[in-house]
Amino acid sequence: MSKDILVPQINVNDKDVEILSWKVADGDYVQAGQIIVAVENSKGVTELSSEFEGYISLCCKEGEIMKVNEILAKILDTKETVSRNDVQITNDVKYNQEKFVNILEGVRFSNKALQYLEENKIEKHKFNQQGLVTKRALTAENKAPKKKSNDQNVAVKLSEVVTERVALSRSKAIEIDLLSWAQNDGVLTSSLTVYLNSSSIRKTVKNFAYLNDQLLPLIIYEFARLLKEMPLFNSYYTDGFANLYKDINIAIAMDLGFGLKAPVIIDANALDLKRISDEINELAYLCVENKIPSNRLVNSTVTVTDLSGDNIFNFMPKINSHQSMILGIGGDRNVAGEPLSLTCVFDHRLLTGRDVSIFLNELKNRLDSYGSDITDAQDVVNSNSDSNACFKCLISMQDYANEFKQDTYMLKVINGDGLTKHICHSCFMGY
Image 1 (tube, helix red, strand yellow):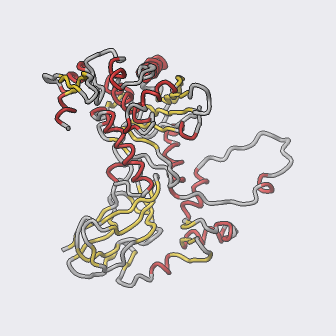
Image 2 (spheres, one colour):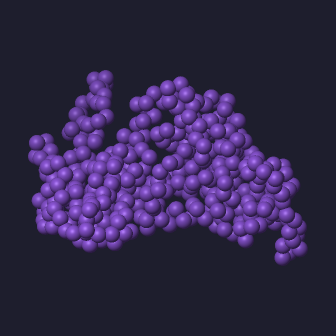
Image 3 (cartoon, helix red, strand yellow):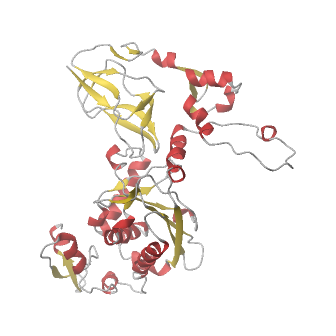
């Protein structure tokens, strides 16, 4: 009896992965949950684990491109040899030497890549320290249409200027394909930007120790609540229809020096401010450790990208597939007032400039409401329109009632400083 381990849908946009390295040998006995292989997708490298216990029989080789739901390996009760089309894998793991040729330190070429280099007379040493080089990576740039130059005054040919050609990583090549979706699928993109000073908001944020002086959790918190009120921003277009997502799953684009990833906060609108902050911190840690579970990279409905930490004030992010918008957060803490920019790049087939103007200005106003010159966190709540807002998650009585569709109530509590505050039943029961 055998059990199949299939290529998972690691990212909603991915159709395939590349097998980078097997962590086990053919015929090894593996435990359920044991890491067995590292694969590369559009968001970088992901390690996959076995769902079952038993003897593993590998069904593909390193460097091979495998489609989602194809068989990676089989788990057997006894050691066997498995075949898949013309691929034969046995307990002899010498296929590592057969499939790849190590010609320089830090670089490996697939056989097809070597053939491509030879046919195009490309020198191998130019790829030193580039890791795994496949034909797909070498030919990725050929997918883009070549534009003819109309400038007749160019005296030097490009080939005489370019001194070196370096292959892009496969994850970058896939990213190019995915981000080209907006141009190739008829998406009519536009963008609008609003600006606000964040210095007074940051003073308030200091009252919430768990925020670690970060504005991103606060922005995500208000952004998620606003998406609930304006669902067209949490949708995608197909054939004259707006497809409204039931859930609000916010992907946060992160590049912490280990490749771009977009882990997802599930049901973001149902989380309080502390939970959102904890989620962001946890996802950032998992990105650095390269331990993001595959189920946290899928099913996003909208995306946020934040470059304010790099003091990038203005930029134009790209809409992801099957989404109607992306929110770009820019800023510069070296400028007086520590200004922020909020840029919405949107699908004009679903949203109008007026829609986006209302959305961005409402988001700006909500963030500005935290900017009073105050020293106590209770005043943050009191500065909102509803004085009965929960001091812990900041949800108003009206929003709380709308969210849970049932009888709701707030409790009055007295903190250690003798101040009277309100807390929603959900937060109270969560203590």
